View 1 (spheres, rainbow, N blue to C red):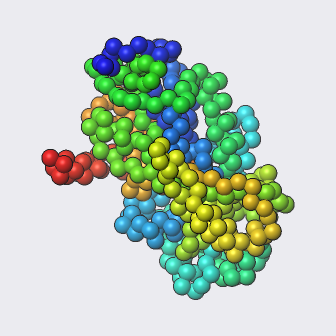
View 2 (tube, helix red, strand yellow):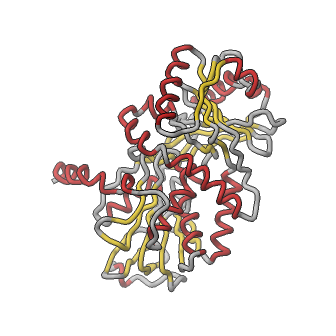
View 3 (cartoon, rainbow, N blue to C red):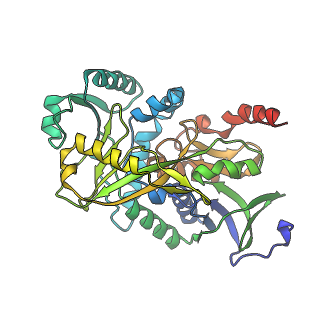
Length: 397
């Protein structure tokens, strides 16, 4: 069927459509609507990263990424200046929201259990200091003073004062409310099947009909690459299913975001007292819809490591476990206008996408509204992948 012959859904007079309703898409939609745009935000709910997020606010480079993908180190380092600004963007957003989102910035500890791990962190710390991060090394005496909940095996840590945590359930709800109050039309469980650009009009085909608009922003996380391909742009987004746990509530013990120098782990305690444990343990996709699903080996391994690092974990009951989807590119965000069409924009955060969400949305909003972005976006253009796209076409043909 011709896309132009499909009936319109129950929505009209839309200036901008945001495709993807996670942290970036919801913030971008709200910011644009507050600036006077008529905005719709479409989300299909598939492979959602934000709604399954553990709420870590990262700043220092995660050892997991350095170990698993050392080829990404240059891109991760180039992206580092975004992260302190991203935490500040969360603080600004928190001040604007009407409800508490349990945002706490009390610092993050990346812990070491051996001298070799400590030396690894020391070198990383030196590099991050040179790149402008607020980091320092702590020895065992320091650990006993500021983090007595950590186990005796911890010999030291790298501390980043700007790291923290947020409750994603509270934050996602509050941001959606902000968007609705500004006039955003949130269209959930709706998938964009096809994008057709016809002159100055963009037609988006959905099961409910065609949505016509003047411009779009692709903020669909791991699904962004597929949408970009429809308009002839190559952006390699890969969905990575990851595992998370949450314990019963306990007294407030863990003020920091906890990571490990060598092993995959994140831990933080919410204001409710529950301890959220994640950090990159693999989940799996179940057919036929590729639903992210828990692996028992990750459930047990994740909890065992958490209890080893912070023994208090061993006294608590597990109340929920789940799997979410992380979006992988090359370690850097993809932000700004499409080179081939000034009606199309990209808002795809790089590593630690939840951390970067509000900042990426703010930067793309500024570009879309013809303002100078608060942070130069030259390093985050999709054009860095254009050579890969040409080579891919040659191989296919």
